[in-house]
Length: 153
Image 1 (cartoon, rainbow, N blue to C red):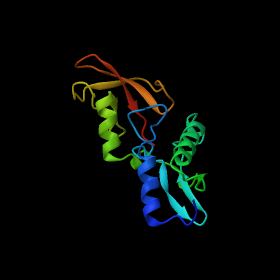
Image 2: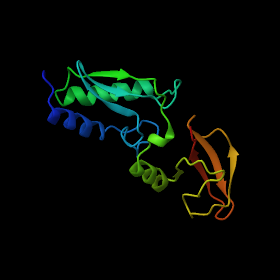
Image 3: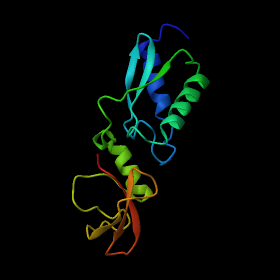
Image 4: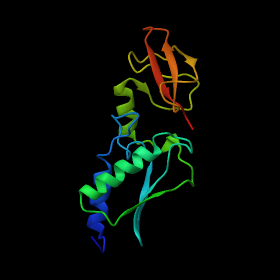
C-alpha cells in the first residue's frame, strides 16, 4: 500500500489499539503509551520501550508488524524510539483504570499505593521486585491481599 493517507494513519492507530501488551494483556500498547506516533516519509510507527532492557520489546514489535501486515499495511515500518525515554505519565487514563480493574495498582508519585482490591491506602511494599521488572510486590494491611504496583518512572 503506498501513499498512506490521513484516514490510513487513523486506521493504523486504531489497529494498534488492539495490540495487547504481552506482560499485562488487559492493556493495549496504546494504553501503555508506548506508541509515540506515526510519520509519513517513509510511513512508520514510532514505539518507545518502557525501558531499554524490557524483555517484551521485541515481542511487541513483532505483534505490531503482524497486525500491520494482516491489515495490508506492509509498507509501514516499525521504528524503535529511545528518546525521549518512556515514562509512566504516558499511560492513558483508560490504561490506569484497566490496571486497577485487573488488580494492579497504577503508578503514582505517592509514597503508598491504593489497594486495587479494597481501596485502602494502608499498604506497604513487600518487595521492589514483582512478577515483571516494571512492577513491585505490595500488600494491603486492611484486606491483607497482595498486589502488584506498577513502578513509577
